[in-house]
Length: 119
Image (cartoon, rainbow, N blue to C red; front, side, top):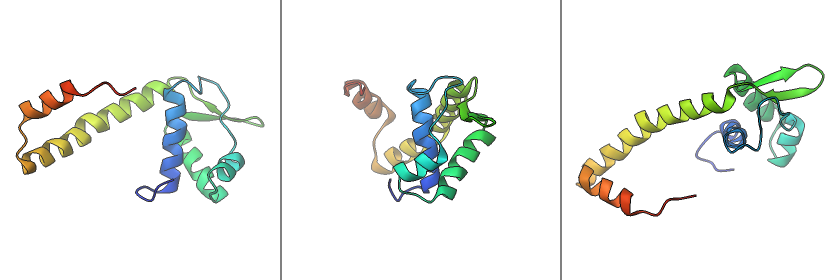
């Protein structure tokens, strides 16, 4: 865990990453909030908040008496939201900083094209 974001958001992102990478598929049970709190050494309320936010967003759903499961279309919802953030916020911040530093768009494109693909 890092201190740049609230812990519940970091937990949410880890669960989302597991969904995006295929570690969790539609209708798979995720680990319990009790296990999340033990795994990340956080207050159980923090784990519940992360799972509740994902449920509110339609990423997870409650299977009464069983646990929390991955909702249909969760991967697509996560990917679309993160793509939107990347295209609308991250790139804007990148362009603003590049402009401040005197880096042209052409130079940035060239640097990006020369970078090896990260896997």
